[in-house]
Length: 136
Image (cartoon, rainbow, N blue to C red):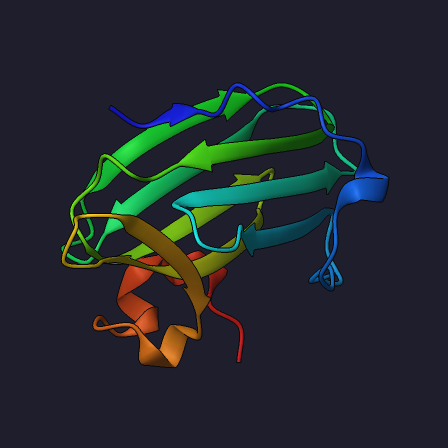
């Protein structure tokens, strides 16, 4: 079962990497933690309401879903219990969407690591992943 990591109380100053700001009401930063199956998710929403967090596998099946009511959130998600493969992480609220592609790898000792990949490296066409989120 995919569960948020116990280390959710992380200040924004400890995050590194470049945020991916969109010209929308939802600002996100998704970062794979080095040598682990943890993915750090940070978002800021200008709109009150629910932020939907969904993780889909390469067959477009939802393997994890969560509804957050916070307008600001930082948390780690542990993907170690999922099979190796490509996944998409979707964050959406009030018509604003962000999609990030992830690749979960396992070595010969079954140690899982995750990396953020480009959507064009994903094995499913981006238009079929989340049509309302695709921007060209």
